[in-house]
Image (cartoon, rainbow, N blue to C red):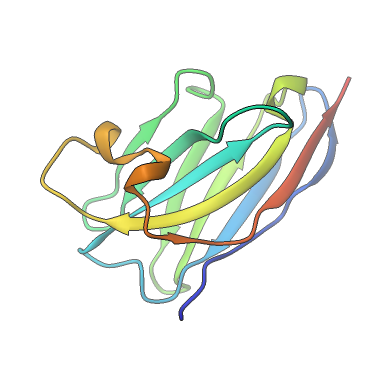
Length: 128
């Protein structure tokens, strides 16, 4: 089974930046939406951002708007999440996932239940 693989996590100070990468071979097509989720200890997994590789449209959770940017590189089969202005509340395990593209608004698809394929997470820790 094709797997997604997230990488790039680490320890960063408040206000710092990190770029996460998600290797997603076979998923950067018209048939999928690719997403970043995160899960902090004791909390539910939440959507961070989604992208439709077919037209590069994006969705962001309110908590990360203006600070995070999702992008895709079809030549490398990779999705990126550029994170800046990091805060301690951003501390979590970050996962990338892929779901079947359906004819609904992206914000509706950008939920854990809308994903069919998951990668292992990468830890992001923001220290104050």
